Length: 537
Image: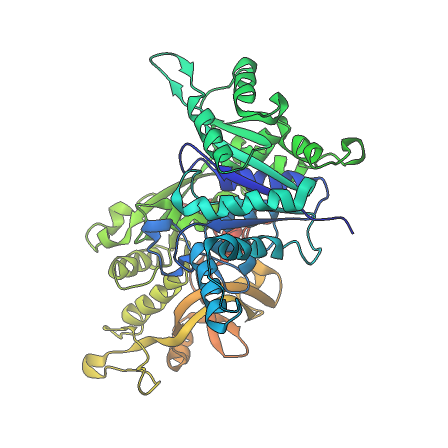
């Protein structure tokens, strides 16, 4: 059995350069050559996971199939590689320290003084090597969050330094930096890159490959200068220039020979290694870039000021639009600002509406108003998680006549529904004792629209929510045309609703956006966009 190779991607100069995209692109290129690849993210923040973080702090909270709340970069990994990630693919400083402290409390260290080196670094190395220890992968590509020089990242860089010597030729380090262009001087400046690499070297780590982020082409003489000052071969200095879409990056990095250089440095004979088969990827990128007609979609949510809060939904809409030969024109609408008086103007000329997920009551009334507008005007509407629950509440209020319909919570003392019977208060949703996280099975009604969309009766989708549809109202919903078309058989929980007399009005309790990839766009998003295109305004 071939030894697993470990590739580390670090970043310098500034954050938000796209380490995750470079890591995912390299993974895609190696996968396209026939290798088994997985990507991992090490996050330096002290939160145990991003589940409690406000989306404005860290963007979307991504959920793996095994129910782990993870960094949004894992979404990029899955969308690029079309391979599911798990808890081991995302590790935070909080989890590292929590594990070490738990071991200390159990007495695992036999009374020794617990220190960053070796105890924290050993735990980091254990988590890195966990993915490769079973022999399931040829490559484990680990992205180190943060920027070289950050105090939070020091234990991770030290762990990489140690692994470099422990793994020998089975280890490779890619460093991503920024080369700014000074307009006044009309020059590209390499000094920030030099300082970034020097900082990395001071911490005992010498990069093997440099990827230079830039808005302008970097000429050969500038690359040679970087190679000379950074102790890197000229062939291992490559650029990653700005592109209109992240999905162009793997093709650009193939042109830069990132995969070839990485394989060579890891001891592979390129004459015996297949070329990367990127045909299906190329087809998608051409569809994406060559589409001329637009599809106009609204995303209604409470965190739209930061689009990364809905990263997977936006990327899923991009996938679906491309495969429908359309260019996505997305309108982000803050649900707080939607009223009965302005809803028509805010949603005018749109072909489809997505009601976004999100915890808490803020912005709910605006969502109800947008849903009512979509329902009355026969506009395709997709509700996700809280979006589906908002559909239920709006239907109960405006069709069933429960004017004060809302959601409720479980009383922790009695563990039963808290129902306010005053003023015909109806509780359409129940609050579960804990969140449903990860993949759950769902059975679809054969005569339903979703059965036709999925093309099968049994599906599995990822969840992240506390509230559930209250089955006490299921019969009333269905008598009035809102079909509960997807159920979890084990718990009899409603997973999908769809409106019978509407051309496309579907709410799902789960998050289909987590499962949409470049090669396999999610069928719900693809069909939603198709409905918008075929019968749009």
